[in-house]
Length: 114
Length: 114
Image (cartoon, rainbow over all chains, first blue to last red; front, side, top):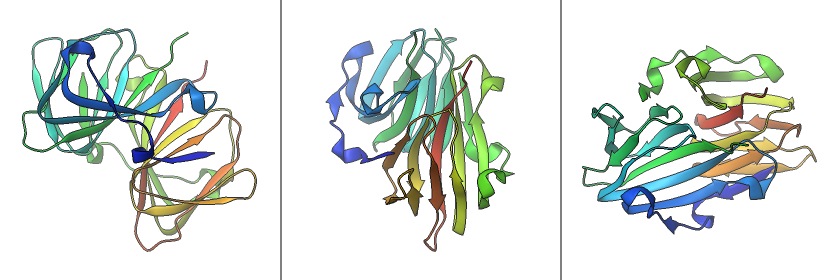
């Protein structure tokens, strides 16, 4: 059993997918032991974004704080908030805009594929 | 992309592992699409518990609200709180006691093993 506090995990700037004002903490990873997926904590500051992108890994997202606009592969927008979950299937395009004046913070789980 | 609010997912009573005063919501599951793991939201009321047990699936846990005591396979106790993560490796014994007077709420991810 390995207990951590999120602030004790390094906060890194996200630059992939044309992201702006976005950071990530890789909370639980393969360095902690045998596992099938990784758990990360993202923060997008007001006005920040993660640009539209896709990949073969699915995402499970749980919103901890704030609100933001999710963009899907059909050009639709979904306004989400604290205690929403978002499932993004493999290969599906997705992006996030923090169009609010507060931080948008979420947990995002991604599989380690073979 | 599939967006849900946690309260729109059925809350079920947990009886496995001699649990008491504990409920689960299976927030994101295989019924939502292709995926390698499931995301669940647990609530343990004051005085409730999940008894010591183990299984071959690992857990990633993120604490949303409250505090509780985690029991590990060596008989040690770990007091955890909001914004702690807990990694429980495959096959390792674990249990949880809510020894506080507020609800203990957490996200728990578990793999779908082949």
